[in-house]
Image (cartoon, rainbow, N blue to C red; front, side):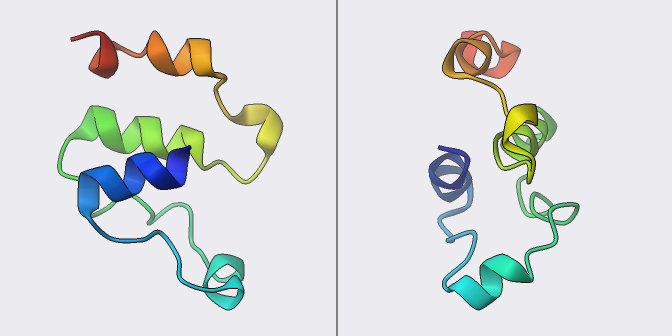
Length: 67
């Protein structure tokens, strides 16, 4: 879901191949998203550790989506 949200905000794919995925620098993932709240949300949604990613309830409760 994070990759989709990233695409909706940038019109770019987060990665195009397995190699790009392996080389993905998550600290730089959201540099091209202008809205800071969206950037933070996407970073959380694409966290490498799946247990650190928000669930759908947490995503929907995000202030950006509530406004």
